[in-house]
Image (cartoon, rainbow, N blue to C red; front, side, top):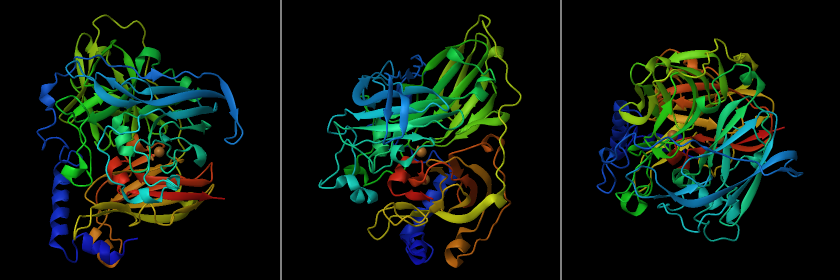
Amino acid sequence: MWTRRALLQRAGMVAGAGSLLRGNLLRAQHAMAPQMAMPASTSHARTLAVSSLQPFVDELQLPMLQHSTGKRSDTKLNATDAAYFRVRARAITAKLHRDLPPTQLWSYSGSAAPVLFDVRSGAGVLVEWANELPAKHFLPIDLPLPGMKHSPQMDGMQTAPETRIVTHLHGAHVPAISDGYPEDWFGTGHSRLCFYPNKQDAAALWMHDHAMGTGRFNVLAGLAGWYILRDEAEDALGLPTGPFELPLMLTDRAFTPEGQIYYPNPPDEGTWTPEYIGDFALVNGTVHPFCRVQPRLYRLRIVNAANARFFALSLTGGVSFHVIGMDQGLLPAPVAAERLVLAPAERADILVDFSTMRGRTVELHSDGLQVMQFRVDNAPAQTTSHMPTSLRPIERITESTAVCTRRLTLNEFNADNGEAMVMLLSRAHWADPVTEIVKLGTTEIWELANLTGDTHPIHLHMVRFQILDRQGFSDYEYLANDAFVPNGPRTPPAAHESGWKDVVQCPPYMVTRIAVPFNGYAGRYLWHCHILEHEANDMMRPYDVVV
Ligand code: C2O
Ligand code: CU
Ligand code: CU
């Protein structure tokens, strides 16, 4: 673990002009545009300019619904008569835009559009994830980052296979054995059976690769999908369904002039890209698509599946929308919004009323970036649905029920003295001994003190939590004197983030407090920053739930 002295040094507070400069530079970038810092691509002549592809020429693809091939049981996983699915991770090529040649991808669905599981709360499913990828990665994967050396799967192997995968079902309340622990990866020709009990409320979960050291390349290659969980309480609301419910997976990519996914190449660009930002927005695998809609109420399920980009979503033409749910399901009541910032891995469930926009087009934007276009029919809608006024009651966690409070820091150590830049949680690496050991069935408060100039989306596996508040503090006092000196008011979460969450945005120089009930399963899980480049180097930590 890093000592306080080393942290001060590396943060440029005691010595090292280099670090100070770098720190300020980072801060300045983020102050101007918190998440749009330096697109990976603009400095390179070898990527396509966003102006070179005409927007809204390709139709939105819907996700590919997965079908169960029967029922199975598995005693080791404690699954009886569960619907069984088999998903193959394969290398494919697909056209992502009319004017792009076919692009190499990895896919769970066999197409550029993500897979979709449509499942019921209370009915567990067995999914076998099969690695049918070639032995070589098509992206420039880099040298082993910190945690790689310690992977137990390395046993007897000199190097881990390049095309290792492990699927994590994000937001799922699952036993550790099926959670997709980063070190549980497997190589080409192998598969892994996971049981998802689905003992949780209706919510839009999503799956993505989580392999140690290569997860960010695997997700960028295309290994991500939808897992929509439904229940009776949600059914009773009569929300738009069928063709009027659109799952939209948002990503961003940079392309080479040949139309292939561009990722900065380690040998030319240094060893680690701190944040991957592509110039093009994609929805369900297509570069800024269009979608035909009727002039009526729609339910949009949105996930930010980008490696690092924050999407600040708004609709053109003054169209507002209502947020009805976030990561872990429905809010107590709809929240009217004009702009919604989704960090990587966050989900939003929104209702949009196109009925006043007959015959017009509406675009979904992310600040300056065009994301997609809706073309509203001129003919009146055939069916209608109405927005419910209340959705699902949520009991707020009272702070006094927490058995303990942990103060955890988000740290960034800048490149200096020949050492590479690294980002850590509580100054510890992935491979350091476990420090967060939680008793099953208890509630804890985690205070996430962000000592960096970035907003980090922090995610905990297995659990759901509630955001208590955020408060500015003096990073200098904290680092120099170990003193927590607040310098601003305690701000409660925004209305749309007041429900159950599994990712929380932790803004710079603030303490973000969350209340977490650790119910369900004992075992080893993890918590991490969901900017996948940060997670890889080395903003990811194991945690244990013990009985
Ligand atoms: Cu989306 Cu470790 O998670
Ligand atoms: Cu997760
Ligand atoms: Cu981060």
